[in-house]
Structure formats: C-alpha cells, structure tokens
Image (cartoon, rainbow, N blue to C red; front, side, top):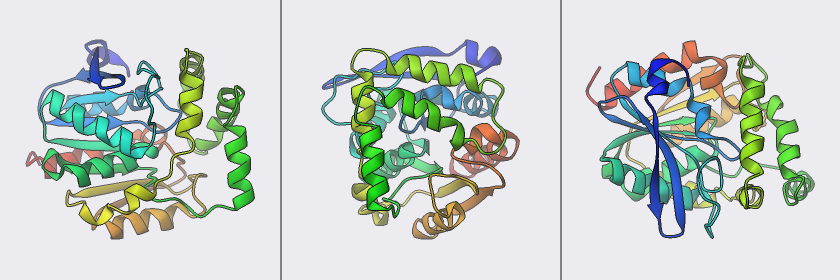
Length: 276
C-alpha cells in the first residue's frame, strides 16, 4: 500500500481455535475483505485497498494461515480452513462483505459464500482456483517434490516472476523479499509446503450453493492455467457471473494493471452494495 490511507492501517488479530490470523483495516463504509493466495501476503492488495477505501469502503486485508503475520500453528491450511477464517473475520468485523479472493484465496472466498451466503454480498475472484486444473501427473509429482522441503521458499521465489508476464510493479523485488522473509519465520516454510498440497475439489463441489453476485478477473496470460481465458469463462458461466479478461496480465492482474482492474472492482462493489 502507499499514501495516507495505507499509513492509517492498523494490524489486528483474529483469534481462531489453533492460532491467530493477521489483518489490516483501512477506510470506512461497506465491508470488503481481501484474501491473498498461496505463497502471498496481504500486501498483494497494497494498491487495491487504497483504491477501495478512497471509494468509500472499509477494506480488510488478511494473511492466510502460516503466511505473513498469521500464525503457523494450525493443523489445516487448505481452502476450507481459509474459508472458515474468512467467515470468522466477517463476523468479527461486522458484515456482510464483498470478498475479493486471489488464486487459492478465490477458492476460500467461494467456499465462504457457499457456507454462509448471508455474510457475502458479492465475490470478486481473481486468477481463481475454484477447481483442480488438469495437470500432467508427472508435473504434479515434480511440483509437490519441489515444494516439499526446506528449499521450497527459494523455488517459490524463482517461480514468482513468471506469474507477472505483463507489467511487473516497481516494488516487485521488495515485495518478493517480504514474502521470503515471511517464509523464514518459524514454521512458515512447513505451513507453505502444506498449503501447496491443497485440493480445490471441496470448493468445486459447493459452487452450486454460491448465490452471491460474482465478478471473475483473469489475466489472459496467467501461466497457472493452460487457457486462462477459457477457465475464466467457465467460472463466470458456472457462477452466473461477469468476466473481466485483462490483456497481457498474469496471476496478479490487480497489481499488473490496476488502472483497468480497480475501477471494475469498485463499480462491482457499488452495484452489490447499492452504492452505484
């Protein structure tokens, strides 16, 4: 984040049965909860949160379990666990909320919307994993091996630039360094490795229960999908939602092309919270 809005953010703690979830709050107004993906920090929304706060929203950005400032003391690190944290956070702050989820965070957001539909007024699913994508079994095995040991943070750091095929932000190196520093905290590398073994099948099984309005945001060069545009269309059709394809962007279109993505998110939030 940057600017006066970011400076007013205060890190707070959501207490869960097995540990704490870190989150920041900026702005006032209808609630928006931002959920990062695997291997990321809540600062992946460092530009999104100020844009929403300036538009009149209370914006909460959270860290996943075992990521950032959140504890690595949990037994579960999958979509369902993260979705439960989203539900608890909305209840803590006071909902309902528009929930923005990036990557695995999108799966958590969709699960939360299915679990407690009265708490979710809208979903923005960015670079979304809401089902297990087709993958060569040998590649899947190689990925799991790469993410299974103490070398996992270095592997992730080397892969991260590939997720930004478009316009990489000027502060990318500092952001990557912050991710690596987080992974070197006690227990965090192990928690990250466990997160990489997440199956999105439990989320796909509940997509029919999602009733909230949905905006899908996909970079059309997202390397995490064989055909990102087709995956975005499938999700939008499955959830009766809208689709924003971001030309040239990868897995983090809200960072790569904020001038296109943020106005679309603000407009969507306005429609679903009756502020349009």
